[in-house]
Length: 176
Image (cartoon, rainbow, N blue to C red; front, side, top):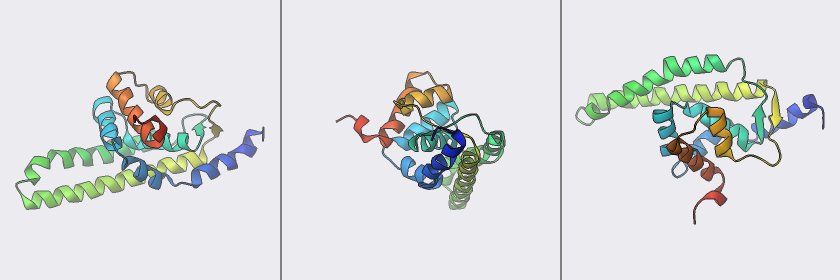
């Protein structure tokens, strides 16, 4: 299959084999991944949904040939909807320990934030299905190196966080 248009259905089939939402939940739930994602989110302003999306693409052996047109809209959604929900939920954390009504409100915000993230992942998944894809080169680069380049990360704690995410996907990289 040398023709890239013939290759597109094969690459999309790889992605369809594992829906992004299921992949993201599985990866995020692995040891050290949540902490790594939150470090990248809070210290490097990495969008965790985009990070998980990039991991999903990489795990399927595909990369985007170019940034999809709709990515700007997804980023707007994250900035205007998801982040404010997260900020409100976090702002209520200490008060929620003292007031049951605030604790309930915080849970409602947490649920809304999760649904906003689920919508984001659905949009990102669709962008991948609509985009021009290409196979990862052989030999494959390291996921952590690839993500550092895509996300423009250079600081040691951020690179270590990426390595934690990579180790969750590739158990052979975990220390023994």
